[in-house]
Length: 451
Image (tube, rainbow, N blue to C red):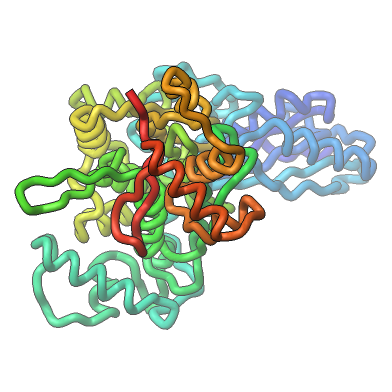
């Protein structure tokens, strides 16, 4: 009888595919310890080849079980092998997205056994990065010719201006090498997502009519590098949140409903701490009552943003190279203090914020200032016998959905002439229900609350 040797920290034997559930646990444990390994069905724990019946459906069943029960998903090589006239199944697997779980539980390989991690052990592993991989440093097929030269130069100018880089003669190749983004003429993953000119990152942005993700007023999909997408995201958010004006002395000051610096901190945090290497998509959703920034990278286990804002915790950095580069150009203020700054800014502005964790991502939520809906306005005005026409009511509803909308766009949305819309707006202004703020070209509508 042929013997395949002994089980090790990288090799596991199972007598039959009837032990598939135990096999999945062993695969996860080996992945979390070594990142790769081999498992055999049809082999006794002693290493003796027993063989088993292997058909195409048997291989498909093993593949399906692995796909459904291991997270993040892996794609092992599963094949029938004949040893000494006996059929066995050989499963070669690897993965770089540690930690892996089997049916929601985490395991680690110790000698030839798989043991479940306790919550404290798992937390320690996540916090200390014992199961992290150096995705940022892996070299790509891209070279310096694939760099967005304009973005890189702007980064350099900002870094010099804020005093975090010396003012030396600009040289793209030398700069990328010093930043740890270029080696042997090739960009690593960090360099490519930061400054690549082939649209390495996807950002989806939308304005929704309600607090549900059902009807959108505007939707945009941008593909670019991290450096450019940060500015694109901020421009989109600033355009679609509400602003008020205050006069101080002879100066008119525009004040956002949510502190812009707090929003930027969260947007940059999203790019700095995302989990790259797969179909990564960032997302910004603007609803009537909230602005949501989605980061495709799960938050550290059993910790929350409040923990980092209120406790003296060390920063947990998923992408050290990306974070360091963003710090140099002042996009990241200081390591570990981002959430503390966000909560402080929001508290000063009396803006509530919250968060939501998901298995594969993290959302930070800014509550928007409440605006009075048109039906509430009518309710408050009824004692004064102020009535609104059907057109005026429709115009108010359209404006509430998009305060930056133009009269022409209102007319198109309502299916009426521009002249009809102009009359309705004049009527709303005369009744004290509507105002225009800002310049004609870049201004916005203000739905008034009548006390």
